[in-house]
Length: 164
Image 1 (tube, helix red, strand yellow):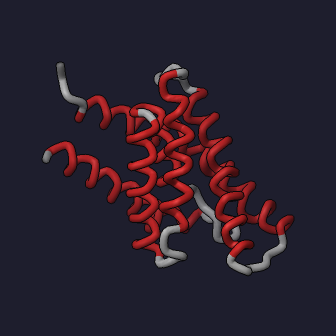
Image 2 (tube, rainbow, N blue to C red; image 1 turned 30 degrees about the horizontal axis):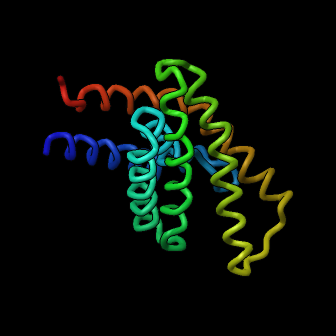
């Protein structure tokens, strides 16, 4: 129960930070996706099953909190969690490059999945404008916050892990 409450509190604090304080620094309405960074970090530390479950739950929470297309964030974050979890046994978990590389790869992947789904739903947008105003700042922001979020997730993971 303590583990669940610790993770719930952590998710709420990160989401509150993302939605309350980060909009002051947004560029064209785009800021960091800390939930995406948290999903990739959990997946890299725990594997594909836990990563996809965490991605689904965190994405669902983000869908409920933002009021956007219901299930869109849950689906994309679940896929990101699964793919990052595949590499959990093949990477050094304490490496500085791990969360940075994950941020560089998962940010465009999530962006393109969301864009493809929006196009399939019939929405039209200028792709080049989206690259400049959305994807570029998203990658830059996620690069800045990738290491601190990964360190916080790793610290909480180590604190709540079952001691054997």
